[in-house]
Image 1: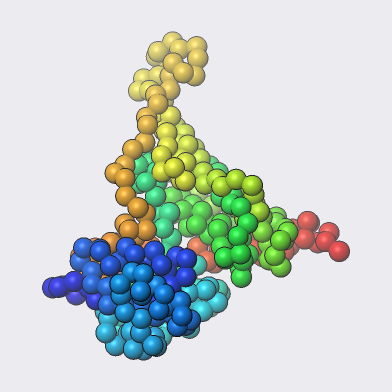
Image 2 (image 1 turned 90 degrees about the vertical axis):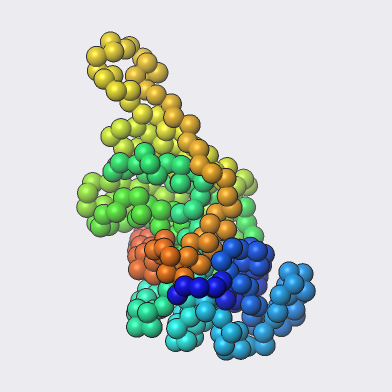
Length: 325
């Protein structure tokens, strides 16, 4: 697709969908046509605040757009996504791609059959710290992530693994780019019927290992990623969008150094400041226009989801789960 602005709509106008609308209404290359929400009162409220049109049905919105972003509750992802793709519309589906691997595979297959763009909203791919680290990454061998958040009701319709950890599972898969060979995990439900805090150890066929922790019952909010590779160590603060790379100085063996500081160079990591969600939406619009590749493909979203379910299965098989009354 080329030519004028991409006519785009937003399906689902909750906490996250609201920001989709906010950004799309002024996004270069896009024309926000309107929104749809299953709750007419919420749709009318958002339409009034952000000066757009609330459509009475999903079909009515799809009649007037070339693409939509979807931010509905996870259990509705498959049904809404299939309805969009059946019409051949471009689709940006918020993470996780679906609430089951079978549903994710259906979406990927339907997008391919319709030759429609399918992108998944793993927004951390656009994080400033991740973008800054990218030029220095060389075959990461050990990765450690922490994603901790205070409790809030939104997102608790699924386990923390699908709600929060999946962000880091997607990042790890993208950074390592190797087959997963083993997953061990433990977790516990505290405030909801689902697992609220979990830790997973993921091993890859190339020898890399990732230790991933996620919690939605913590007192403070933390999003950190540490990466170790043969040339050095990254410490990334995803919440602040900044990081550091500590790498070995060239010819360090001949320096005769006696301290670590003498052989290691500190590289502050910097990238242009931009709202990650805006970058994600810009990339989606470019892909719909045929001017760029999809950053997080449906296949990548399905892969992250499949790994998340492997983690969930490992939690259920863990000794901690077996010991519960």
